Amino acid sequence: MKSTSGQNLALDVIFPLDKVPVLCLTQLTGNGTLSDVKMSFKDNTISFPELIKLKRDGGQLSHAEIHTFVHGVTSGDIQDSQIGAMLMAIWQKGMTDEETVALTREMMNSGEMFKWPKEWLVLDKHSTGGVGDKVSLPLAPALAACGCKVPMISGRGLAHTGGTLDKLESIQGFKVNQSVEQVKQILEDVGCCIVGQTKNLVPADRVLYAIRDATSTVDSHPLIISSIISKKGAEGLSALVLDVKFGRAALYKDVDSARSLAQSLITVGNKLGVKTGAVLSRMDTPIGQSVGNAVEVCEALECLKGRGSDDLKELVTYLGGHLLWMCGHSCTVESGKKEIALKLENGEALKKFEAMLMAQGVSADVAHSLCSDENDYFRHMKRAAHQTELEVPDNGAVLDIDGLALAEVLHKLGAGRSKSEEEIDHSVGAEILVKIGQQIQKGESWIRIHHSSPDLSAHDSNLRKVLVIGSRDEYKSASRVAEFIYPNEPNMS
Image 1 (cartoon, rainbow, N blue to C red):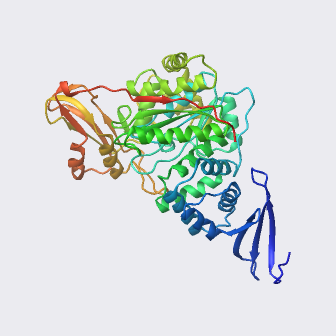
Image 2: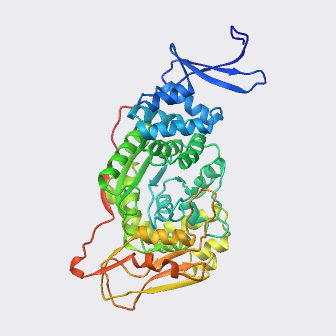
Image 3: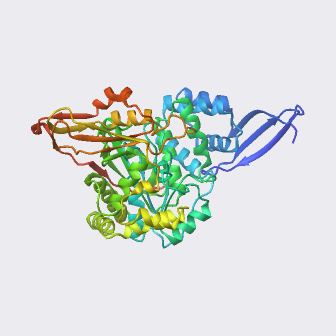
């Protein structure tokens, strides 16, 4: 079409969720390049720079404006610099609950959405991240052993150590990239999978997350909420449990901040049709007795064989029990927890894990060997060139193991990454040989560091900060779990 001045205009009519038409005029220059984007909502017209200014100055974005923003992000019509400016405006001024729900919904709808048979109970969990967090590895197959379906879409780690996908890629042949059809087939055949985000699932989030990382807006509450819940909503879940961590080695240092995020996540999740609850868990010391990638796979396998650390089992059974109750599989949380514990003890969860490994590219011989009674796991995973054990400096009781201090050392040794494109060393990690509250003697080994570089001397001072020894009278035990926030019953909007 032509404007009154003779310029070429491309016309699009967009119908947002509130059913009010949005007229978008894209003005084209003579050579066909984009020169300006304007949108007309009701009788108002606003350019994208003006939209940024609106949010920068504390204004509230309408559903139509948020739709246009997300559509522009996904289509590539909006410049990265403008996206970054909008993200910074959101980081500075925040969003109302209504804006956050609208942003999450638009991101969720920006690509493919999984659709499952009506009779399936489809479950997932999400953790805000912690040191030694390998909970997903035993939890997904344990839920599958209970008859549920678990399409666990996970990520790679930034900062301290690798994420769930990095851990699994320690295993020879494991493929995290699966198509939508492959995911559906694995769920049909096995009941669980742990995969990376597919190309067409919530593509808006993939763009926004990369720019959030580049613009230091990762810690914005509305952006955290929309990123997490949009992906989980697109999975078509029956129930979702969130593990929101707080403490020295967590994003949120105090329980009140963690509770605030958890309550917001629950509200948005339930408003978008996903029954969502959250556990608040402590993250001062590492989960379990290992930190890294390959070493955490070893510990997860021990858990699946009915062995392993008590706190790892506590989290797996607690999260799994609540999920089974939330989806209606179990009548009570306690009966759900007992069923998860049974699947870990009787080997049924281990069988599901073995089947998942084979379905995701691991050879039958390797999968069977890892899941056998043998525990020579490094036959099938890279072992670091060096293992060094550190000795206890004094007699006393173990009062603390500083998860953050340990993770920072392992990151420097290669276990983590600072940028998404960086490679990590799957073999780097640590096995903690003592437990909180244990009485230890001077000269005992308390940790085994797996490292590729031969010399650890540069890290001696930081490693000495990890272990805190004192009087047994000073020891205070605490459960990993602080509280559970139950799903609310929203008025759907």
